[in-house]
Image 1 (cartoon, rainbow, N blue to C red):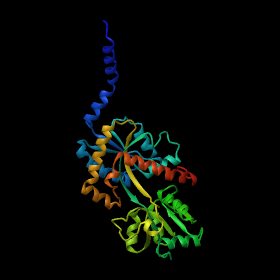
Image 2 (tube, rainbow, N blue to C red):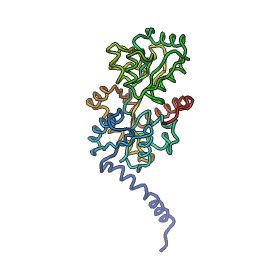
Image 3 (cartoon, rainbow, N blue to C red):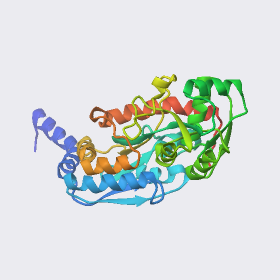
Image 4 (spheres, helix red, strand yellow):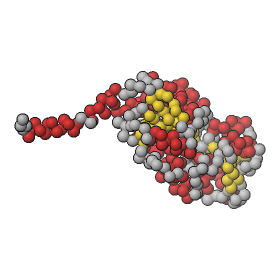
Amino acid sequence: MKFSRRHFLRLAAGTAALPIMPRIAIAQAYPVRPITMVVPFPPGGPVDTIARIVADRMKSPLGQSIVVENVAGASGSIGVGRAVRAAPDGYTLSVGSWSSHLFTGAVYALKYDLLKDLEPVVLLAGEPQLIFAKKTMPAADLRELVAWLKANPDKASAGTQGVGSIGHLDGILFQKVTGTRFQFVPYRGGAPATQDLMAGQIDIYFDSPVITLPQVRAGTVKAYAVMSKSRMASAPDIPTVDEAGLAGLYVSNWRAIWVPRGTPKDIIVKLNAAAVDALADLTVRSRLAELGQEIPPHDQQTPEALGAFQKAEAEKWWPIIKEANIRGE
């Protein structure tokens, strides 16, 4: 049988389009079964708690349940790797934080690229860091604190939640910006560090509001500034770093959702819409606020915004982490 050139070209074009059709059909039907959300930390922690709050609300617009799977280890890199290797079909989500989706890229020889092997879906929330000090610190405000630290180089001590923790990196960034020098004292978590701050065993401390802010209200520690562009709704009397004299010193321990690279755009759009819908829910917002979380503005809840934000965070933090010679444990 002979074919005309035009007939041949039509057949060729149709054959080339065949692999695309199933992907389009899958995206249109998605989701048809439960979705797995991989949390790279143990159950009960901040990321796990936030993930479960959001996942529970996302199931309504998606019409499918979201099963949270905890895959902990190596600062979250094991769980992230599990998600990276999953099929890019929208049925495996990677939820994580500054630690799992940024810090690990500077301290581990990962078998994946955090900025290339995951597609951004949505920035969920973040807890701005604050600058605290012991009750007896003589400085009345942040400017006076910087002046006191400069007048007493290497004499002050700063508690951290551990080597390489976000509080540790806060302190390193603070030193670089202010030209001050002080000693770091690592603790096994935020609770013991806060206890020693209350007891006056350490001088300053960089932390989220969850554990330490109640002690500010009780008058047992001082809070000099919130490392954010805006004041916290839960503590409106604490000035921002801009207001306190260190403009632009912003740090937030953020949480977000990604999917494996190659996930169809239509599926990412559906997941983003479900997450944005969840973040608009008053119950979800209330529960996140109780955890000290601040939800980003609506225009920052797009996949493009998360991608740009993560890239900017990497450009900011990776050189600082590497210069400090911090290694993964």
